[in-house]
Image (cartoon, rainbow over all chains, first blue to last red; front, side, top):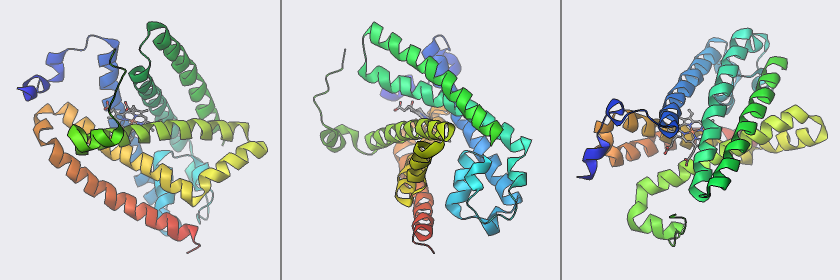
Length: 144
Length: 124
Ligand code: HEM
């Protein structure tokens, strides 16, 4: 029945094509982003978020632990929030999120663009987007 | 090449799609919403100046925050459900129960986020 073919383990399905590898990457990067977000949230609580920030501020920091995201809160001192640890965490998030997000955009585009030429253009655009977003993202994190 | 879909969103939701199809559409809207938002937000912060501040001021508005929090929280919570079911395919027969659970988790976290955003937006 329909369920049977779906129940194959990843090992049995094989990791042959770029698409399959990216399929796995999308799932693993999702877990990676969860790990980094949870790390950011725990860090925020340790650094005193509970008394100085509201829930939305804490979530914003969790999804991107960059000091500019906590500048408008009641924190007495934002210095610990701009330490190298958080810049590295934010950089890891940018790396993973850009790969995951841009590949996701390619998946969506492929649903509507079916010609070989069109898909090639989408791939070139996605390469340009990955490089420019990584460059800008990392620059902003390390200079803020 | 299967590019002609003669079925509208509403028909798809009423017919076979239902709950799982709704999560698929909302996941796509959330992912696309975040990708567009993050791209423009990064560019605005990079360019700075009047234009950059104008765009980031829109993002700081509470109405926009309600939209982007929907995108982020729905995509992240639904994405975790997809990941768990895909990595443990034995759970797939229970995907409808998983979706019900997912909505309960989403609504409580998102509801709380909207409540704080509106309360802060109204100056409380
Ligand atoms: C904790 C955070 C996240 C989780 C758990 C997550 C999870 C997922 C999963 C599992 C998929 C695959 C869906 C499928 O194949 O049906 C996906 C697709 C996608 N994600 Fe994410 N994601 C997260 C963050 C992000 C971010 C930050 C972006 C944007 C920069 C993003 C953009 C996308 C896009 C555009 C797709 C393609 C959607 C589609 O094919 O309809 N995601 N995500």
